[in-house]
Length: 229
Image (cartoon, rainbow, N blue to C red; front, side, top):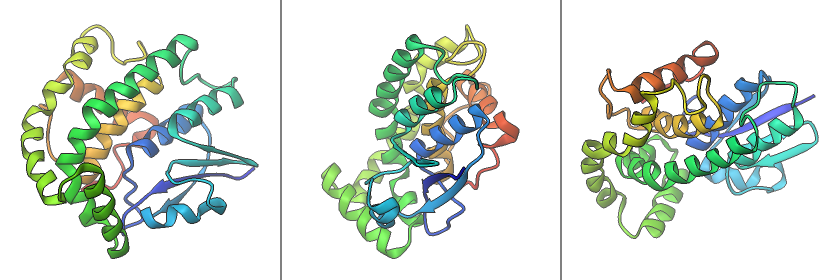
């Protein structure tokens, strides 16, 4: 059976940096499922699989196409119930919904400001034009103005993670004794920052940095071995 994961890339196809794709990468590894990665640039996304999606990740699992990292995780738990669960039940799904909303509202905007020029620099010219136009329309400022605000975000970023830091004093993962999809959500955000801007926002002895290191080392260092900025 063919299993394909369409993943966002820059001009260098080996640098796949989307936080949402990274959630799915770790979800597939968590399930022990083999797949082939198909790198896709921003402007090529509307062309994949007959134009069925405007975003990635997109997973083809045999005849099934699944969009959106959360929906993919739900699908994987339903389709492969004999393999380790990504949620651990309905309560884990509800918790992950909260974590995803917290991560996207608190972390993603800060990372966008920090890394926006680095992401632009990673792209081929056609994708640079698309990225500049779409992000400036969405955010109401030039990329350069957004990046200027990002300098303050670097200083403040660690404080945004205080709820996670407090929890990690009690348990090694958001999922408890082992990681669940909720962990992969926040990992995806930090991996996005690492693979694009590469700035240091956490001290080495920070419980969040130690948690992130444990996730980087999962599945034979899948996250740690990714091509970084």
